[in-house]
Length: 482
Image: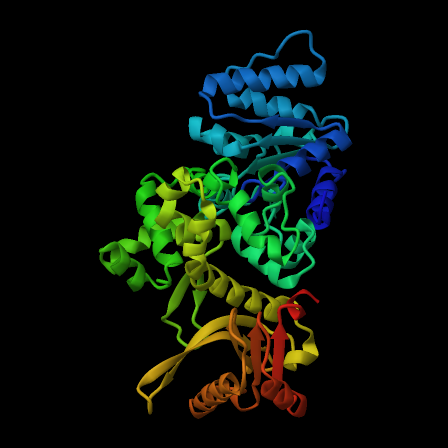
């Protein structure tokens, strides 16, 4: 198990809770993050019951869980159930003597075949119900369909208010992913992370522990893994979309993702890319957001402006690099030529935006207090109007603090460049933007620090200026991993 201490501690504390009364927990997360590994290990360590649902008719699922429960109890024959009320009560009976975890994995499969199942669980866990009060079963419902699992405890859902644990198993962040892949070179680690993100299974099962041997092996690694039709990574981005039950018209949703991967980050740009009206984008964007495939980023300076980004790097890579040349990739004997043709799109549409996102993550969660003068309260991209020049300026990193009066001063503004050595010209641009913000009366703008992020490095004149001026922060690729 790699870096799942928080999740393991939460699960073991929930499972070992000795107080009377059955309790409910919900575990979710995208596929291949290690949820099943955690839950199976929990049941093995505690003598709990684990059941993995299949895509099946309701009657078959009842027979399967009856057989699994009979085997778990050492019964001479499979248990027979006519409905899920009987199943849930039998699961509650497992905890009559002591606390015991009971896991139903891929719960959305069961609920799709029988939509009443959440209500069945709700009724079984009703307050003062005898079967619940006499049990210490710790029932864990697990699933990878993010839109379904996200709605399981929300709004007017039957199980709202019933759960004592809600655990999301996330992907590894970029620093943990570098450790997991065993990559020491920071630039290579960022490149790999921009393609496969932090999904653990992509290294173990999908790439079969094939990692870049060094910076010079990166191009060859891309060709023999994600661009190879014989690799499971080759079609994985397509399957991620198919995993979501709320996504019916996959063509439409692939087009929306393609628009975002092509640099159309706002609703109007996405609609224009698809040849539709902006209002038509509300539903597909909401579905993709509920599925965890995209996320909204509010503009740091404009309340009415929101941009979207794809949360799964492999999906971005697929739409930016692979989808435009998909037929060639399937039939070519020379992926090196296709990869060379795609390098510009990889740098501009994948590495650049990914680097900006990593820089914001570092600033918000990792940068030490003294670097920015305080801990950031929020970090976002922003757009600043320049009335005199009749233009606007994009700011990659805007860090806000939070003072004792609940005001949010600007701590820092920053620019991130993946393949460009940053110099004095970049610093002067940031100084100009800071002056514009000060003229607008933005709190803290006058003293905001100026942050330059570069994966390539910094010119000597910028280094010299930073040494003389503590308001200037230079962050290289290696700094992001310290």
